Length: 180
Image (cartoon, rainbow, N blue to C red; front, side, top):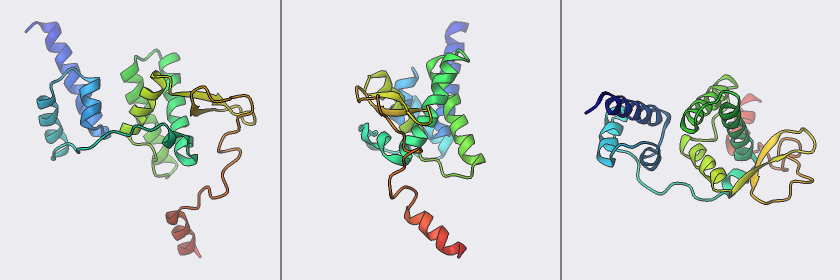
């Protein structure tokens, strides 16, 4: 094995470990690395101490459009885009860094992250497939995730115009009743 191929393989293993630590599913690892499925399963077991979860990946763009997921998805995707443009990161490095920054922001704000790594990865794939786009809010001028080819002319985001039930989850209601 040449030194270049050894370095490439080490980079692939390091990327796989990083993605596993962040919560990547096996399908994400198979797509983003050049390692074999068998090697990825072994690596997953080493890092997580268990077999990778089974099941299908999310496949609907609708989840990203609902109120709270839209706010989180928009935050993550804007970080991702700025890392690709301003920092000149390649796709996968920008993805990992953007997810770490998103997760760190949620921790600092003491907010439960809504966007898992697999959903964040799926979000990027939906943008790459032209299933989603960014629309600019006419009020706050922020960029928000929207269905591709949807009218952007009079778009108002979910922060400027939240739905009537926004933030009224069972968990939030429980926390409010405990404070009283």
